Amino acid sequence: MDSVAMNREGIEMILKMIPSDEEKTRIQEAQMQNPDTPLGAAEQFLLTLSSISELTARLNFWAFKLDYETMEQEVAEPLMDLKEAMEQLKNNKTLRYILATLLAIGNFLNGAQCKGFQLDYLAKVPEVKDTVHKQSLLYHLCTMVMEKFPESTDLYSEIGAVTRSSKVDFDLLTLNLAKMEKQCRSSWDNLKALAKHNMASPMKNRLTEFLKDCTERIAILKIVHRRVINRFNKLLIFTGMTPQAIKDTNINHFCKTISEFALEYRTTRERVLQQQKKKANQRERNKTRGKMITDTKNFAGKSKKEKKEEEEANALKAVLKHGAMNGEVNLNTSMEPRVRTRGKSTGEARRSSTSKGAKDADPDDNTEEIMERLVKTATNPGTRLIPRERKRARQVNRKSLRRTLKSGLSEQESKALGISSKSNPVNI
Image (tube, rainbow, N blue to C red):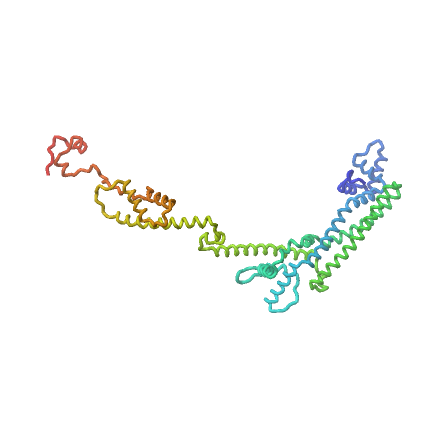
């Protein structure tokens, strides 16, 4: 019984092709009637299969040996997940906060003092909405739970076993466990049938040990299954269900309701956190709205170097402001109608204006650096007034008609006008 020589599919195919007693009899009769005619490949194959003793028992035992580990895993893992799921639901604080807050909201809206509610109502929480902001009841539930219980979590990440249990059909699991027990019993019968045909003692011992181990494991699985189901019923009693409701409750449906609610709660909680973060950022922006960047707390403390530079800049602004006021007076006087007179040269004017500005400056601010900047500002060609240019006439070569008629037309002009040059000039 080597799985390398033949897999599970090959065993099933051979089980389907095993000939019945009637087919075996017909093949043998045909061979006796025509001894000289050889059998076909299909008939020869069927006759070979029928010659093997207890072939069906051997193949069924082999199939059970190959499938046992997979069947045991399919039964044991969901039971362990269900056990872990019940522990998660009992010990989860966030779920208690949610249920308590939801009960308080329901009592307030209904004007009653109920001690509890059915867990099926969790599926309807996302569908109920308020009439003002059109937000769901789950949205308000998340907001209240986050405000009152800051240590609460998103719930969905803490109940992974509940989510896995919601995908398992425990009714089918019970049937698979019963099927395993039935196949184990039939394997004992098959082993007894094989032992009648002089099976080797080492092989017989290995198969016997295998079946004993399987029998013990299946018995343990049955005990675990019974205890886990009993614990689940106690959990339903803990939630306030009646014995009649417990009988009608499906494990898959119960876990699926809580898992879907937890997923909706996590999604809504993330949306609430995003909105709160946006509002906090908006409040921070409103605090600095209308203020210069230097007035904010990030620029509140200045170093000694920055203070010194600021004092120098203020002193320079005062000097430049004083010089700008004098410049405005001169500019206003220069806008009067000017008469062409020979005046001082441009260089002398610059020197005179510089000397005047130096005399008018405050003696307290006459540092070398300030004076250099002031001289550069006063002598900057970009600040000079650009002299206005006289507009020229558009028609430069325009002549008077009277002078043209008196002096007469030239030969070229006469030809252009179509007048002969020999004609007498026109006098006005």
